[in-house]
Image 1 (cartoon, helix red, strand yellow):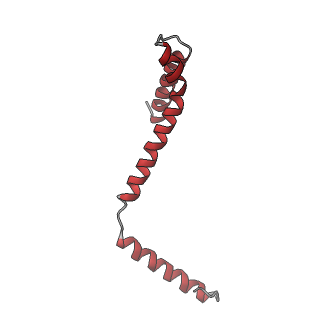
Image 2 (cartoon, helix red, strand yellow; image 1 turned 90 degrees about the horizontal axis):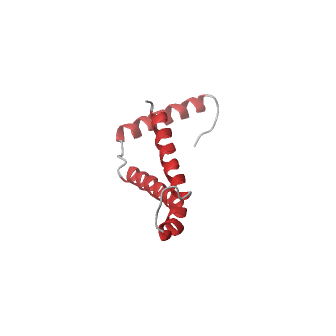
Image 3 (tube, rainbow, N blue to C red; image 1 turned 45 degrees about the vertical axis):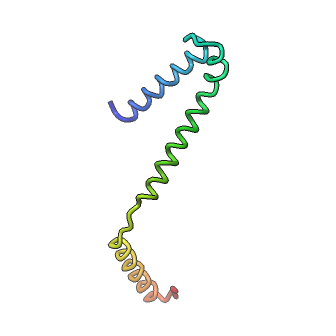
Length: 92
């Protein structure tokens, strides 16, 4: 099973379960049915966004500075400047 098939299967399972709860095919108490079930998609969206924001922040926080890449980039910039100057373009 590919990752896409697995993701679609899980999404279909979760959405079917939610739809069964929302249509009251699975019995819950009145308070749960009226106050909790309708806001579950919004809660899931906010939770997923929070998770992605955390992953992004963690990635930025643990990003390692690579001096070799910096030196390589500076060398490429110098080569490009020399090439442009040889063609008569002023680069400063």
